[in-house]
Length: 463
Image 1 (cartoon, rainbow, N blue to C red):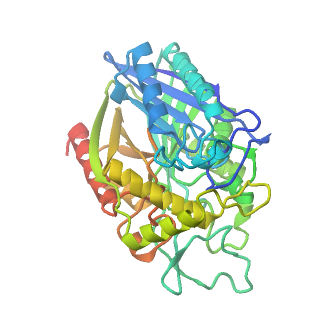
Image 2 (image 1 turned 60 degrees about the vertical axis):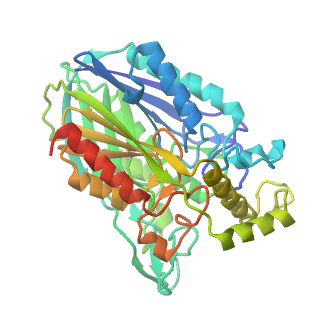
Image 3 (image 1 turned 90 degrees about the vertical axis):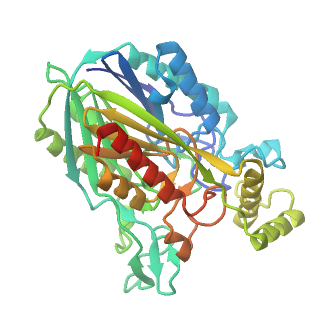
């Protein structure tokens, strides 16, 4: 087996819109740490696959398709053997618009950032991503593989707190923790988290490590949380983790973010939760990875493979009452409603109405969403690429039922979908289940995705 790796900076220039917040103008002003496109190419027995990770918040389908086609044409990959994984960094741009689709026509051009992207960034980012693939494709070398797992349960937490009234709220910056007796409004936490630190390490005969994959599950929102409308560029904890491991081992580090749709880095019962910053998470995870590597056995592997399955998931029908309310708001306010004189923050109620109308128009045009499930096999390890912010319960079920030796979930791949909650979550509410463009699929979507993913894994690895 041979691998190649590339790493190219994709930090935006001053003024580029940062994604990750709804209806807030966030032009890049300061770089806390740079953003990168990182590529891994794996080749064996005449077959090869390509994994690209991006320190970005999201990628629009049109740009993912463009990159995959360019990579396939230039370097001979099959289209389905190319996976693109934006890590959902909330202090980074997106590649394309992801907050509003082309169905919404009434956004003034000077406020086009309300759509979530920035046209000035897209061509630059695509060119740099292609350059990272070029570097990887031209640096193939023989390697052995080590696989291992650690457990770190002190950094990520289920963010859906069931309150005393039975409704759900998100602990953290929106709910004060430092109350005299703690946050006694919380009754319990709705679900689990995923403490696995997965490590897939490639080693040369010289014992050097040119590249490793590290999987963990947590929203990269540490820098964002300190100032949700701030303009600081940062790769958050995935970037900090990659930096720490490069100090220890050199080479390149591709971080894989798992099913973190309902997972945040804020302990709901710790009044000092904000002391956990992205660099602390990076150092702590790096220490665990180091322990895992020290116990690894390395061996030659020759098997690589991939499978892709497209399933049609219905787009949610907007309830008539909700649609009428949205129409009335937009009828009274056809132009953006601002909450400040600078016109940098839009009224959330107005934007939510616009997003509801967007779901309605999308459902009329495209009643079924084309959802792509992608599985990579590297030796006895499976990477399950799933678009959207799947709730962690779905990722854990796939891991539990997978026949592979190790299975790592890779979320948000290839195109933006929005949240994919559990059926139970819809009973309690919360922004992850509200009918908006960031939560537009039917409640059955998660079960459909999980079931199909498990079938693909069994086809690839046997039962």
